[in-house]
Amino acid sequence: AQSVTQLDSHVSVSEGTPVLLRCNYSSSYSPSLFWYVQHPNKGLQLLLKYTSAATLVKGINGFEAEFKKSETSFHLTKPSAHMSDAAEYFCVVSEAGTYKYIFGTGTRLKVLA
Amino acid sequence: NAGVTQTPKFQVLKTGQSMTLQCAQDMNHNSMYWYRQDPGMGLRLIYYSASEGTTDKGEVPNGYNVSRLNKREFSLRLESAAPSQTSVYFCASSPTRGDTQYFGPGTRLTVL
Image 1 (cartoon, rainbow over the protein chains, first blue to last red):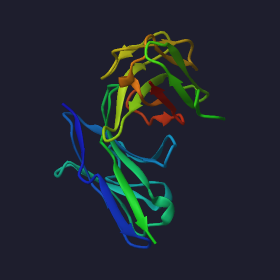
Image 2 (cartoon, one colour):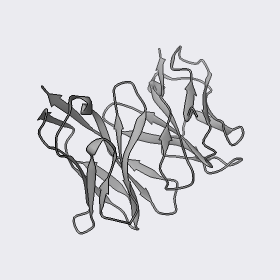
Image 3 (tube, each protein chain N blue to C red):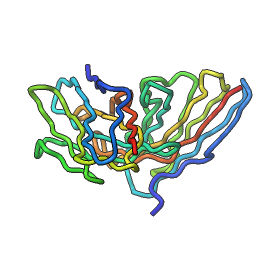
């Protein structure tokens, strides 16, 4: 069965320092993996997705994620946090050929001035 | 190009009342989805529609019904609302299965 684990429910960083949000997944087949961001009282917006092409995926707003099959991880990074990055982030896995998307429980990112 | 729209944005119901949440997309996507979001639980799939004319249950379908009215519209109905259905409801669409989902702004529902 598929599952997604976001290892930290809350992460705090100082503005200008790197961001690391961790995601581990399990999937029987070749998965598609996504990161979404949700700002307060808003819908979810796609940051980036992995679909079995390059293992390092670049997204919007300077975010990127690396697919590591051996570690079953898809961690999200950004070199330098900005105040506007404060939001909740969701890691999502979709199993090939299905309509099922499994969402992690989210990581709330706080950016300190 | 509005993307995915949802109405209403907010709703307060009394236990036992019924209501329909509306969702429409203008991206010509085949697949549409209804999720609920509760604190600390991520998003859980209520129902989905793979294509016009088909609907299927997701993870938490009890207490809900859906209608895929046409390719653009996918509504969610609560026949007899319960306090456990207090949540934020999101509609999403995707070109096909497994593809990127595009989300609406959500409906915040409170059942008293």
